[in-house]
Length: 553
Image 1 (cartoon, rainbow, N blue to C red):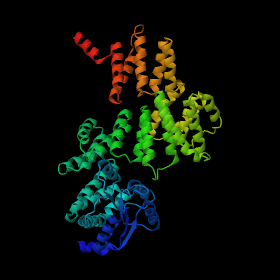
Image 2 (cartoon, rainbow, N blue to C red):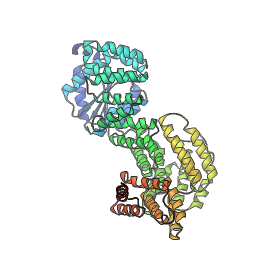
Image 3 (cartoon, one colour):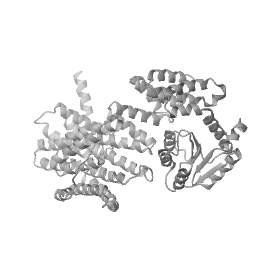
Image 4 (cartoon, rainbow, N blue to C red):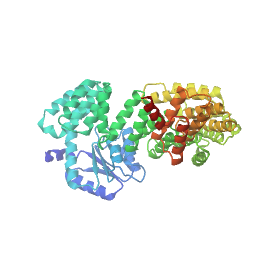
């Protein structure tokens, strides 16, 4: 079989992308001995892209650690985006790092193979032989999938499974059948198919795909039982979290989706689209710190990739301002300093037609942070021409700026424009649409930032205007439900109101929401003590509730 393979090997064109000369030497030597002739080398992403512009390659050996300009993850994305990698290209990832987050990131790209360094000569020959034969013998099947002829792909795949000489390729063939069933929306058939396969195999992807089928068929209880086992398996936990996060978004369970996608992003941090979903869900769940972290991660991970853009840096500054507007004075000062530092770096774009106005808007928002609303108003006088053709993030930030100076008419107008921009039924549209529902209420009914509302509450509390302080803090908590100082201040004010006004259902709901923050935020010893004191004062401490239940019995 090897001799038969070698007769056609000379026709294949190979590209090796790695910044280590030893890897190039090892691969070239073994591939030449195997019969390859056309072998090209690149030690950085820039030269690799240049070579791919000049000719096409059948085999690409791609190191994850091309450290000189961009990593293999982003280079793969760019090669695929530019059409240099297609269904007929065999891609083998190389890496000395086999940490789980890196493996998850690579597996997500679905390359043909993944080899760990240092490379072994026998493995090179064996795996190359396998991959060549897979391409040759399954060529028709791959072409049908590439043309989206899924019914024909299933028929061809089932015939291939009956051929004894293709036994080594049965896992690939079986996976193609399952994916094709899904593409044809034959979810019941897919469920039966995966259940039958699991009687024979324990492939990690089989468990994930069965779970996907169950979710599509609304068999959520069984899916959740299966997911509980997949979450604790190292080879399935990432895919399980990613799957259930997407399902929760589809079902508009956005709080659950946020919790799951946070875990998936930690397990595979390089995927920009997932990080963008994380950012969207963070703002939908009023997690301003989560938004800030997500924008920083997007900015870092996108460096030198096809996703890289000055707008990513703008988004970090914007989220820092959002977080600062709901933070304590000391925290806000640190955030302002960081935002201002990045703002100074972006002054090179001051005269850019698109980015220049965004820097002016940011400057106005920073002025508001420093209680200079007059200065902010002066800056925003030069901002006109709202349009659906502007970027969504640009319009959102503009809307916030006009809201912060109290221009309700312009705020409502910009909200309407953004709503038109996100019309659609994809996952991002659903999340942003829900977010805009919240923004519409908050930006039209609440005229101040969380920081301003808290300061107003402090003045009202000092003058014994407890009801006014409560209203201020209730609005602040609505805007920033993960802000611990606001939450504790709200309990403190409620204690003052209780003697004259017993707690109502809405206030009890707010108290329960504040208690639940212990599951998501880190409480200092002092904060825990304050929380318990306030709950005792409100007769809502768990020990008091338990005692009351016992007395009632």
